[in-house]
Image 1 (tube, rainbow, N blue to C red):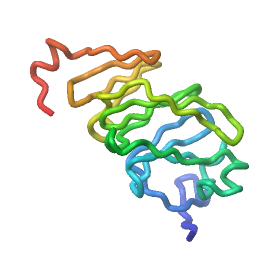
Image 2 (tube, rainbow, N blue to C red):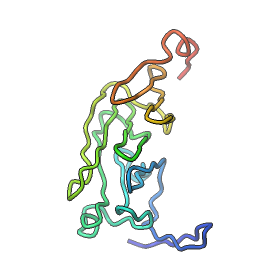
Image 3 (cartoon, rainbow, N blue to C red):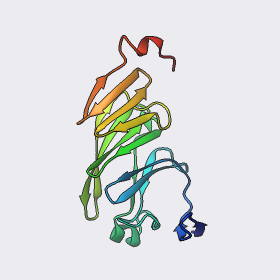
Image 4 (tube, one colour):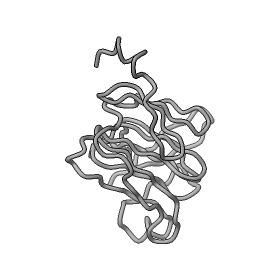
Length: 162
């Protein structure tokens, strides 16, 4: 794999595998990305080092807790990530997953808690504190503590055009 070096505004060299991403989010000591190379997965860097993106599955990646997670194709593309210091929500077009930090070789556990609705377009989410607002093909919703509330029904959704 060829390494590409970028100059950052701070003047430091940033070394990466050159992965292009549709979106990203900080989760604990990691950066989660939606790679353009596989729209059904997410990747994350080595713990605490945003410049280190080891090859997923390698001994180097396992030692540094870097990784990749693939999601089922039948829920559509991965479209957004919303995270904080404790967990992340990963949105597909028709599902939502929660990533919880475990550590060790597993690093994160991924649990599906919503099937049927998700974020139907790239990065149509907004986080305010622990609330995540998102747009699905059914309208607008708020996600808080793993509970989804429809917030546009009868108000915003009447004028909603997907």
